[in-house]
Length: 159
Image (tube, rainbow, N blue to C red; front, side):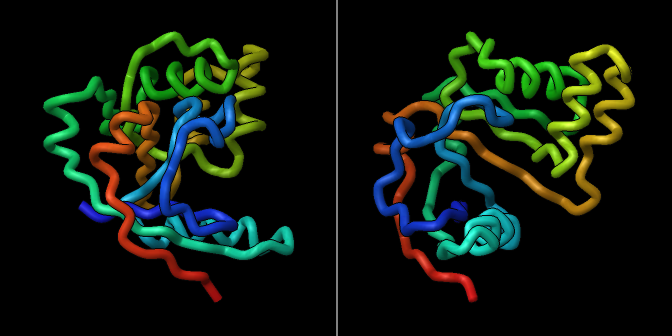
C-alpha cells in the first residue's frame, strides 16, 4: 500500500522523536493512503511561508498487523473520541504500535474543549468532529515498525 506524509521537508528516514505530543493519535509519524489529504497537510506549511513537500512510502499493512499491536477505528465512535481526547491530554498509556482512523476536522480544538468542559455530550462532539469528505490517518508509534516496514519511495514539492 502506498501512503503519504505532508510536511515542509522531504522525509526520507522518518523518526518518532521529531513528532509532536498532544495530537489525535499521540506521538508518532503520521501518514495517509489519500494523497490529496497529504497535500492539504503540506499546504499548511506553505500558508506559513514554508515549502510544501509530500513524501511517498510503501508499507505492507497486512504483515504489520500480524507482527505489531494495531488499533483500527472503522468509524467515528465513542471509543474513537475517548482515544483522541486521551491522547490530546497526554494521558494515553496504551501500547499500540500503529493507530488507524479518521481525522478530526479543523474544529477539533473548539469541540474537544466544549466536550472537556461538559458543555456538549459525546454524541454531539462526534457529530461535530466528522469530516464530510473521506479521510484516513495512520499514526506509526513504533520506530521498529517504521524501520522495518515503511519504505521511502519519493518526494515532490507541491505548487
